[in-house]
Amino acid sequence: MNRKPNTPMGSEELKRRLGVMHERFRAHAPGRIEDIEALWQRALEAPPGDPVRADLVLATHSLVGTAPTLGCEALGAAAARLESALRAAFGRSAPLTEEERAAISKLLGGLSESLA
Image (tube, rainbow, N blue to C red):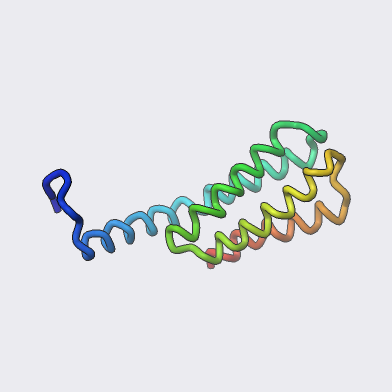
């Protein structure tokens, strides 16, 4: 639907556009989760202070805000739990403990499960 600039969008058009955005987000979400999983694999071997840790937190954080905005509330909640665990573990500026590795790996699995 074409509208003139500065004219209000009708509620049906807004719903349609949001629906398209939701479907597009859901279609790309598995790839974003795979990217986070790949960053996690790199972070497992990285020393404290390595930029991959910040990259992982940022990638996770982007899901925290974007997912619920586009109708994927469960994914947003799972990402928030993961982000919290990552910040706590990385905030110590020390190597990850086995307990942290196991807990974060489990939370990572929750991302994909939240899309089911």
